[in-house]
Structure formats: C-alpha cells, structure tokens
Amino acid sequence: MPRGDKSSYTGKQRRKAEHIEDSELARGRSEESAERIAWATVNKQDGGAKGGGRKTAKKAAAKKAAKKTAKKATKKTAKKTGARKSAAKKSTATKKTATKKTAKKTARKSTAKKAASKSTARKSTAKKATRKSAAKKASGRTGARKAAAKKAASKTGARKSAARKTSARKSTAKKATGSRGR
Image (tube, rainbow, N blue to C red; front, top):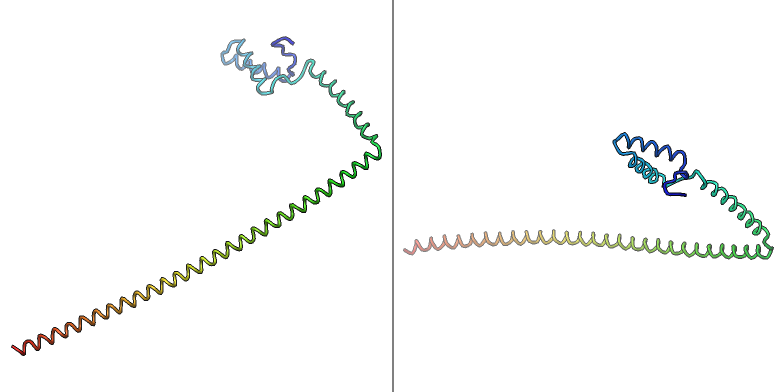
C-alpha cells in the first residue's frame, strides 16, 4: 500500500476526516494543512485505520482457520484414554486436598492473629486502667499534700501570732515595770 493511501480507513473515519478538514478550511487554513490536520486527528482519536479494503478479508480468513484448529484440538482432547482421565481425576483430587490443607492453615493463622490481637487489646486496656488508678492515687496524694501544707501553714501562722502576742505581752510588762522603777 503506497504512503498516503486511505483505502484501509472505514467510511465513518473518512467522513470524520472530511468534516474536520472542512472546519479547518473555515478557520482559514490551507487545503494541504487542513487535510493533514484532519487525518492526524482521526488517527489520534481512532488509533489508525479500522478496516475497509483488504484487511477485513484477511481477518475473516484468519478467523476461519482459527476455528478449524480449535475444533481439531477439542476432538483430540475428547479421545483421551481412560488412563489419562483417571490420572486427571487423581490430580484434581490431590489438588482439592492440598487446597483444603492450605485453607486450614490460613484459618489457623487467622485465629492465631485474632487471639494475639485480643491479648494485645486486653494488655492495652489493663495498662490504661493501671495508668488511671495511678493517676487517681497521685491526685489523691497531691490533695493530701495540699491539705498537709495548709495545716502546717495554719500551724505556723498560729505559732507566729502566738509569738507576737507573747512578745507584745512581754514588752507591755517591761514597760509597766520600767515605768514603776523610775
């Protein structure tokens, strides 16, 4: 097929290219560039030529040949001997048992994973509970500390006020005795 031959494009693709070419000419492009843009657009949208010409005839012949070979292959497989069939049955049976074993293993693994995740969940909840109780104890301790500090402060305040009173008494007593002695 010579370069630029459009015989392998479908009628729809040709109409599309013609429409694009007309719109490009209306925009003011030259005839040559409008045709080039039109076929480039068709190729990009459709991925090249989709049929028409000789390609479809070749495809039909190839399909017929493929059908014939498929029929021959199915006939050959239908003529399998009894030994082959029993061997095939045995292999499928072993495959089934193998799949059962693997299914059991995966089931065991999943239950083990679930148990592990449950134990970790239990551990984490236990940790949270101990943290909470420790926090409560600590807050209780701090409350006790605060109360003790208040008590001590009140005691020292009482002592200071008592000391002030006694010193005031002493000073008044000294004044009183001092004034008598003069």
